[in-house]
Length: 498
Image 1 (spheres, rainbow, N blue to C red):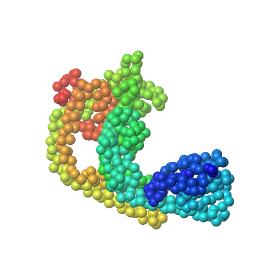
Image 2 (image 1 turned 180 degrees about the vertical axis):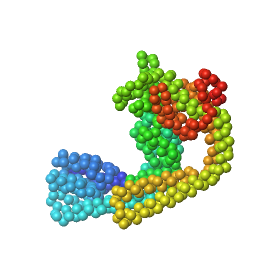
Image 3 (image 1 turned 90 degrees about the vertical axis):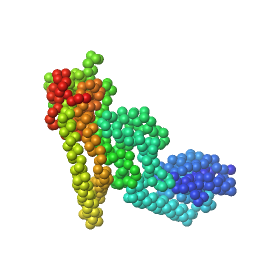
Image 4 (image 1 turned 60 degrees about the horizontal axis):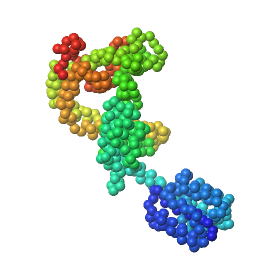
């Protein structure tokens, strides 16, 4: 009995309906082979696109047919089940012309071989061309549909981790199981106390897994932390869109994380040897990092890395306990007395009545800014129509204006309500600053380092002096009067109460 190969396929993008399911194709193909006296010796039953050039199962069929001259027949369902592109059509013609194979189409009862006439080959070319056009039309309509969906604020693809695609509504919703992990990842990275490596380890220990149960790697975590989807935006085909899905984080936190990931912000990286003050200091002379190392296996010293070349410095190596004392002045400068804390609380209480006016002014400014951006965007469209700007510049400026518009819209949304805890939050900061210096003195080295990272973003070592660039809100407390002027071991009465 003559031997044959059977290939049945459905596209991964279409429904198995109208008699084109894999089982229906298989049944029809076997019935066709039996009627023609053909014995099917191998079958490929796959779900793969007929448009892509790299079709694994189809290429296996072609190679197998070439290696086995005793197999003279290949059965497909119809032409578009075989191929929808010219690349694979040439492969089939090679089988027919050079390897003397006969190709069958079970649904239409057609065959084509090297003995077929020019009319048969012409019709075969037309059928492939029609299948190719249908594939192009489907692709174009799908792309137009996805673009329209993006314009409406709906992300037209699989939801990122922390969200789920609702198959019923077609919308993207919060994943109650994984969203808390996403919040935790952004919060921890924004704190500056983690590197990507250490945060990935923490997320693994906490139990974060993908929907397939896979551990989230360092690279996957980096992609997650850079995804604007979590604050309400998404990128589709190179353009930034405002989404209608629920937020997991705020834009301010996202921007803070991007700053840390880019190296512009201050982040905490735990040294494998446990040097608490690593990545806190830079050398005033050359700008290089000041890092710790063990001496004689017992004492910890910190020194400039001399990455840009060695330089003279009488205090090149500073013991860790001595360095901790040098940091004390930086903490003391943002520690305020009870009198100052009380005075600022009174000011906060009085200023609370002005919050409505300040809020209204801020909202007016934001609305004005939004209108200005929209005018620029409209003017950009007109410039494009008039041919006054090339495509690359147009796309760059369009993304820039749309990004600004999204940021402004988010600021307007987040500013809709006045902070009702304005006074309470301010008081908490003041109470912390009042206790900061004695708290630093009582802390161990690791906690000292955490306090230092809390109050400042950058420290510079110059000889035996350390200067700090304070973070908000501590930068506002730096130059206030009445603060500890002596070391507590000299006069504890001058310290604010703990």
